[in-house]
Length: 169
Image (cartoon, rainbow, N blue to C red):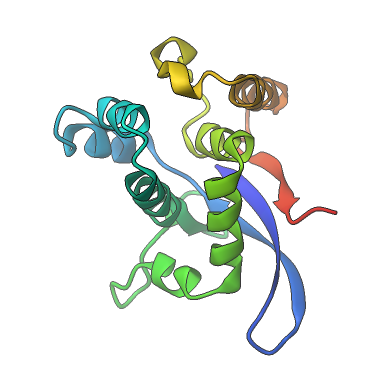
């Protein structure tokens, strides 16, 4: 699970900085992999190789919204749908916090790599050997290395990764 502090200005003009939670379970990752023609990883590699910016942005939007949720008070569940069956990500997508995060990930490959590494379960290794050559930039490799180091430093009972807030000055 990733806790991401995001600094944004709400629609009342109030500047805020709040933590938001993102997580993909192993089951969700498997569903995404199987539910994508050719597999999710292969599809992402193809999109990056063809330099399809619109498709890359769609993938990041999907990842953000699929990963967004709230941890239950007892810590047993990561809630993504409210009692009425409405995804919590709908309300999140209507905030400037979402917009700030989306723009950060769309414009900063290091932040994007750290986000992806942070939302996957800590016992799944981010295999850099499967990264397309275009993604093996020093920034991305450093972000993946830092995310893995962060995962290894965390206490075993916690699966929460902390990233710096968006718009840090």
